[in-house]
Length: 311
Figure (cartoon, rainbow, N blue to C red):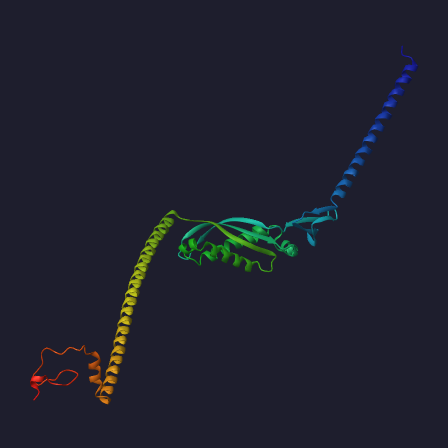
């Protein structure tokens, strides 16, 4: 038979267990609430600040409307209300492939690269116009459009020979297109140009023919130069001979003039001094008498006839 004391102890134990269970439930409930409050607090705290890396700029949106921009560093914002959109202002490189047509209607696949950057002063305007999708929405389409426009101004052969010129022209066109927009074009490079195999073969053959023509032209120029050198040399020799002949003729004339002057001087002297001849003869006579003489002739210099003829 169960004692009353045992029944009482059992009821007390059950009542104590009920109290303990209720306390545990309250404790767990309060702990959960506290945990939720702490978690919400942490979320609020963590959502009240942000950082911007060097080389980036941040656009601050409040309920979807741009209210400001942020420079690199640590910043505060309103949790759950403000949204941050980051835009890089570093130089970015775009690789793009597109199909173009040359002036003579030759199709080519070109591979290009473009370096550009965003002006930090224009990040709000750029975000307002293009969001963060400015590259896909405006930069790449303009690269393709300007590439087609510029390539269409050159024949296919000129494209191969003028790659740098075409790249520079595309860069110039893009700079003009994005002028005052905050999108700053730096450089453009044409990395590869692919024509059809048939056209590339025809260009190769044409270039070989042009090389041959150039070689023939150079040979003709060389032969022409050689001929000109021969003519110049012959003319020089002829001129030298003419000059030599003219010098000789001048010398002869001078000698003739000198001899004529001498003869004239002698004639004048003889006319003025008749006995000068006899004096010259006497000076030049060696003292010997001639062995034969003409009839009625006189002895030279002294002017006397032989004794057998004197009467």
